[in-house]
Structures are given as C-alpha cells and as structure tokens.
Length: 394
Image 1 (cartoon, rainbow, N blue to C red):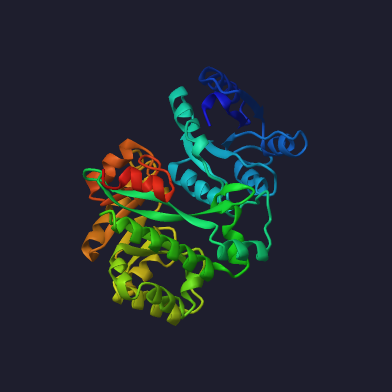
Image 2 (cartoon, rainbow, N blue to C red):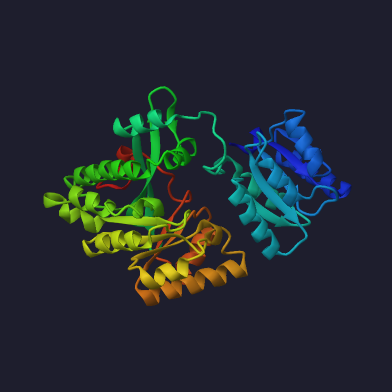
C-alpha cells in the first residue's frame, strides 16, 4: 500500500511529541493522521468510533493504559493494521516488546527511539504495505472441517515458491514451498485464512503430504526442462509425531523419483512442543538417511533450538527474520547472527537468512558468511509457472 493511501493513528501522551509526529506525517503525505493520548483513547477510537488505521504508532510508556497493555487489548478488537513502536527506552526493551506483539499476532514494522525523524518514519511506513497479519489472528471466513478436508482432497491447496538465492552472486539455489488456497469462489487465499483451521481439525498430516506431492510433481516437470532447484517444505512437529509420515514420503519418492530426495528439504517448525519424541526422531532420521535435507526453521526463537541441533542431523539453519531485519543497525543482532553463522559453519550446516528486505542487511549477512537469503528484497512467493519463467533456464 503506498504511503499516500495510509491512515495512521499516533498514540502518544506528550503533546509536543504528538504534534511533531503529526506534522511529519503530513509532510510525508499520508492520507490521514489522528492522535490519541493513551491506550484507552486509542481503543475507544477503534471500538466506539469504528476507526481502522492502517498503522498505529505506539508509545510504550504512558499514564493509564500503556502501550504494552494496549497491544494486549488490540488482539480482541477489529484492528488489523501494523504497529510501529516509539520509545525512549533501550533497544533491548523495544526488541522484547516487538516479540511480544508479534506473538499476539500483531505485525510490527519497526521500532524507533525518540525523537523520531522524517526519514525514519517514511522508511518504516513504506514497509506497512507488506506487513502481514499473523495466521493466528481472526479471519473473515470460518471454514468447516468438511470444507477444508474437501479442498485438500480436490487439490485446491497449491505451493507458491519464494526463491532462496546465494548471497555471493545472487544465483538461485531453490525455493521454499508456501501453501496458498485457490478457492473456487474467494480466489487466492493466504495461510492466515486456513492454516490454523488445518491444525485445529487435525488435518495437518494430510495437508502436508498433499502439498508435498504437488511440489514433487513440479520438480519432475522442471527436471525435464533442465531446471533442478532445491525446494523446502514446512512440516510441523505434530505431523512428525505420526510414525507413518516418513513411510508416506518415502513411498511417494520410490523408484524413478528417488533422485528427487536430494532436492528436497523439510523445514522443521517449532510452534508446538514435541509430544512423541521417539516418533519425531524416527521420522527425521529416516528421512535424512534416505537423502532428504532437514532445516531448523526460525532458529533462535524456539526454546529447544540448541538441543535439537545437538541431537538431530540437520543440514540447514534458517536465521529468523527477527534477527535478520535490521542486522546492519543493531549491534546485538549483528553479534547473534555472527555467532550463529560461525556455529553453523563449524557444524557443517548451510545458513539461510529469511525475511530479508534491505540491501544494507544483505551486505552484512554476506560479509558474515551467510550462505543463502530469502525475502521480499529479492522475491515474493510466486506460482510455479512464474517461478520457472523467472529462475529457470533462459
């Protein structure tokens, strides 16, 4: 969404700071800028007045309801915009509050220390159009289990591919397969419309295997055109707790398809704890022994990331976007990424920086020795045909 179309709500108790930000927003050219003096007033604007800002610029420390409390309450409101944090507190506190907000499902486009400047505000507002609501937030349509299961069986869920590029030279390495729903009436739907329902209805194993089969078919087709990218597919710990998962994957890649195993990685996400550890480890080890790659997704955000690295034969380490975004400006992020890359190199793991959006961050990651990058800086998720045309043989 262009800045000229944005509506912005400034939540700030200091009248001078409030006035300055409103003036800057006017100079930047936003469509509408309003102000609220505390969290309660901001909630009233949303719940009583029906105001729906695209961006909320939120101070943290305010009398009455502070910014942290406000964000907790926002989850229960129709607000579906993005959050920009502003505070005089340390970067460590703002980083922690940003993580809290994203855990609530509120997309945070950045954090600024006071006093803010014209260029800082403009740069962050430019990101508002790409801010994505967390899949845990409420969606307009609540699909039934029969609707979701039927869509899986009919093949309406398809992979879109977000490219992974070598930071040294930007040659394509492959892609991550990300699920989209080609709904016959509603059009293309992102994961926010269905992924939580797939989990709730206990359909994740079926969903993952169907997406895997479609991805495998694309790899087969591309190989006939001398295009053999490496593709990764997300798999939840709940699916890996099913001891039959590896059997199904190995059966699908038996015979003439065996060669494709080396072109596929499973990205292990850690949103849920491991309930059946023995089955989880059995699936991962069997897949790795048969040639599949294993990636530890969102590294640094899971409570047992280090433990998993010590006991599971991963081949790839994905650095979470919360560390990648702003690494060029944040010494703490720089240190954490540097140590992660060094550790990965010592363990013989490939490193992938996900959520990359800025050239200056890409330059730092390249200098630190990170192998691959994935993010809107280079490519958004695109359909199979577009991926072939963009990155396949020319």
